[in-house]
Length: 284
Image (cartoon, rainbow, N blue to C red):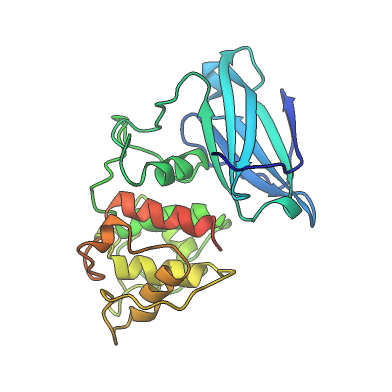
């Protein structure tokens, strides 16, 4: 049975809107951003990503499950408004929430052609709909491929809503012509990455589970935590506390497939990375 939270939710369809401090980072499709309205309310702002398609949408339903996940259904049609928002009362939900967007009549919808039915589908879809990740030109996400340090920094900068411009104050020597240079410098400015002793960042090198856990651990302040014992975690390593924290706050758990052959020093794939960041966004 679906546990529907009766939170006070309002929907307003609008053809145009001006919001201060709005920062949409679009991937293709219907995207959203969450804005604070005051001490007790938040707004999920939705916008169709490609104005040249002349598409709009109408929200057909919305409800909370478990006071945590807001489900929004919509109908896509030419001529409909391109922007809408949903307001909700923070006294009735557990913030930060996760938003799931569903197109009416498309129960098998997935933003990428190669994620349907996989373990991380919900989390990849969440990051896509939040405008945090994009796929590849062929419409795929490549969930089993390793993720590079640069790609991870881009996702984290977007997930944390970091803005501004960074400077190469640490003298990184291998990013001057890199496509992710500005994201890397912004990540460095905010303490997400420090580079290696030889002044390199090695942006195209794959990133490990230990490195991802360390960065997520210090990037979010989590509201609650357990104090569990996890038999597969290595002890006495530089990353041991960060890995344990990931399990204690629920970013990882022993039921995840990644735990079956757990190795903190191995590279992490794109699917597991998306899962961890999605959980972090809706847990901290």
